[in-house]
Length: 291
Image (cartoon, rainbow, N blue to C red; front, side):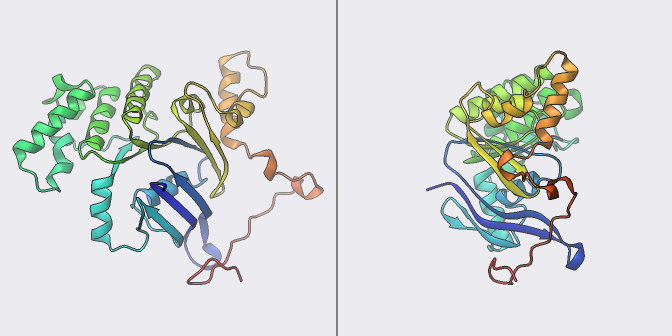
């Protein structure tokens, strides 16, 4: 049984002519222990998908099973408890509290489980040792480098021993050396048996994933298994379709990946040269049937 299963999930914002379809009848499942990298251009629905999976948002239509439980219509307090006990979040912007030291930041999620301060700090200290920051326990966030700050954020995500890690651009604010450290740490977390979902704009980071999903206009348009250390064929074909001679060419290739639409969705008729506005789908209140 998948640990995550979305069926015909749609997310709409706005009303009437101003309606925006952020997710369009997405079907998506994740097995325990997978490392899934999610790619796609800005506005493709990546963050909306993560917010729904992470129980930070609800789908407008469709069903969501998390660990065998239907969660899309649960009450807010029940969703919060499941989110606290099941999911760890790693954000691009770190989201550490500036007035708390490193140890206190990592221990903070444990306060919501009713643990005593002594137990919270002891558990937080053990996690910081795992991420190589035992000597930074009493530093303030502003005293850390970007890579160290992200490792603190990862320690905070792990302190509750979650089954699923959701990482939204975890290396987006880091240099290449710090990014490598973070990805090696995520790889270790994955090898320890955790399920990881990671949004990234960097095709090179998909080398760490066991599966790569590509989104466009609120839909999943490619879903491919991947071997560790290799860029999936779908990404590679678009990234390296033109011979790369300079670093600038390589960056253009990366940009092309983010704009690419799979060949199977293109049409070779005259209308393909005309820019058309995607129609807004209408839904009945209790099912996905279109009018």
